[in-house]
Image (cartoon, rainbow, N blue to C red; front, side, top):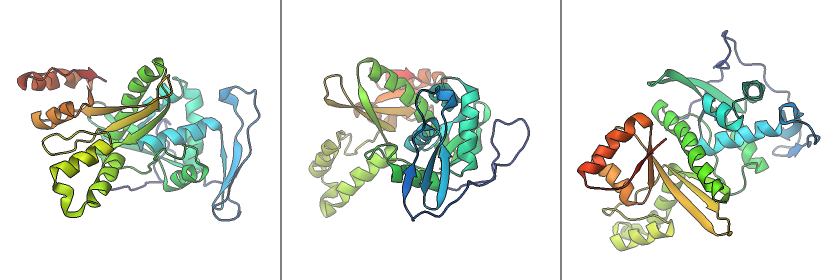
Amino acid sequence: MSRGHDPKVPFPSRETDQGLPPSPERTAPNEGSVSSSRPREGRSHSREPRGIHEFRGHRYRLRPSEVEGMVELGKFRAIAQEDLIEFLYAGDKARFRPDLENLLRQGLALAKVIPYEPTGSRTLFTLTKQGHRFLLATHAAGKEQVVYHGFTRHSEAHHDADLYRLYQKASKEIERQGGKNLRVLLENEIKRRVNHDLAKLGEEQNSPECKREVAERHDLQMVREKIPVPDIRIEYETRDGEKARIDLELATGNYRGRPLTEKIRAGFAVYAHGDEVSKLRRILDQRELTAEILSL
């Protein structure tokens, strides 16, 4: 996958075309050291002071809300500007703008305007390599949460961004039922783990019995001697403290009958954009499958 970065992309919501602000202030602490000052309590979220974080020769000034934004970008690889505003900032553009400008200015995040058929284009954000290293060093996302950085191909970047909106819908229901400590696994990470275990089997990796054992180890099902993998898995703790998970697939109108059928039979909850739901339901009807396609 291509993971190119373009540091010259201007902050996208400005009405005039301006470049990014200057590079962050730099110091020379020990390589790899991380330190931070805690913001004073009792301040409103919109007026939180920025603490100082020193890491690999850089000094960053960050609010807790800015670190939270970096964590979200890392978990999903790419998020659309309108979704960050809606879900992370509760629609408050006045708080969103200075936070994202600060991350862009300090080289921790990257913005890119990407062609998007439904609206012509949309602005996506991702972490830079330095932002990714910062999260790993500070464990801000949690030690078990995988984080990503950099843009993939345009279609894949939009798909990643759509998964954030899908997550918001599913996580709201999980939390309504008392779920907590949610963690996200994207398709690439699940595939990496499955393929790692298959590779250790050597010549036996094509054996249906061995493949089924690997699938079960990762809480997946075999379908037609394949191991379908969901777009996103949400792992969480139930109200009673038990471990639980839900596997989600974001289908598009380009899905053919067989791939969609495999996802359904693998037990995934399948979502689609509203204008594509009826088309996908017709495919299921033709195959006499009764599973529901949920609207995103």
